[in-house]
Amino acid sequence: MAPTRRTSRDIRSESRLDVLHALLAAGETTRNELARTTGLSTATVATVVSDLLSGGIVTEARVASGRVGRPTTLLRLNQDRGRIVGVDVAETYIRAVVFDAALDETASAEIAADERHDETEEVVDGIARAVDAALAQAGTPRGEVLGVGISLPGSMQRWGGAAPVMPNAAWRHVDRLRERLDLPIVIDNPLKAIATAELWFGEGRRHSSTITVNLGTGVGAGIILNGAILRGATNFAGEWGHSLLALDGRACRCGRNGCVEAYVGALGIQQTLGAIAPGHPLAAVPLQRDFIDALAAALEPPEPDPAVTETIRLTARYLGAALADLVAIVNPETITLTGWTVWALGDHLVPAVRRSVVEEAPGDAAADLEVQVSTVRGNSVATGIATIALERFLSDVGLVTTRVPTAL
Image (cartoon, rainbow, N blue to C red; front, side):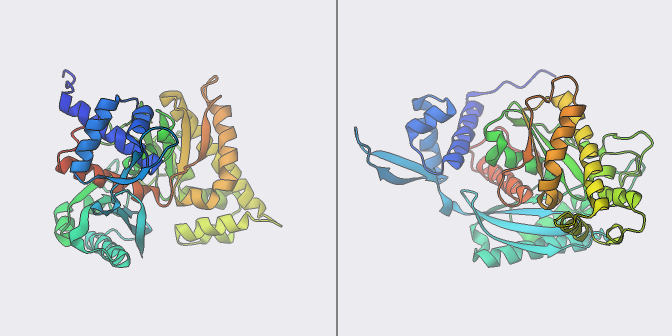
């Protein structure tokens, strides 16, 4: 099939997104500075800004007086345009975050989820309760909500039939979710959400090719290539956690053996500890986030637990080797790590992972590679899915025609 030709409307849409990116990064800035930052002509920036002002997306913040010449009008995103909600649905929790239209967080609420159950009604009800609680916390009437972005893990079937993750059932009942919330919704998976957050708020601002890796119950990679999020033919790109790390290795939730997730997901890390020290009390902690938090505590001085220290060393080696495969295939400029495992263990894990990637990557592929904890503030999944919801709103009002997510 021949590639689709970009129209002048598409080019203007791209320019609007470029200006929005620059405004988010700057907070407040001028038209001339936007032209310099984006590389667009001053005439194009003037037209784009006029469009965004007319749509209420951008507002003139104030007038700044310079030492030379006329005063300059500063622009910023219009925080009062409405509210966006981002919902991170994980196996162990459901977190809803309310953002203003400049994507600054205003309130949040979290509902505990039972990782051992996958009933659709529980997931749908949990999402609705989290959204209601976050809106109440923000004091936001539902009529001010421009859209709700919901990140659902899953949409992937087991090699053999059953779904591998708890909230997957909600993918099959989007109509029920839409009816329950009675708000405009967009649904995508967490890998596209973290990639979007990295593109708008993190290393994607400085680098055109970035991989951001989410570590928690599940493991996956959001991939940005040449400034665009890699989705693949069926939105499946990034399920790196289900690529092969060890032939005939550990059983994975997906039904295969030897997947990356089986070694660096929370359950895999717990299994590593159990293999190193059979009978270790932390190997029997029933809930995953409790286990990871306890693992982090056991690494603290004055006497770090030697079995836990060895667990982190092996986990870093597994993760580094798996990331080296991504480096060989994608050749990114930087890799960022995020997720609740990283937030708890990052100081102990990241330096060793960086060394492992450099050792395992072919040739000099990783010689200049940056490996770090993501700088995206707050919950990157909620931030990213809220950004996708904002993009969808911009599409609905006719300001964006390209780079709009294909999710529901």
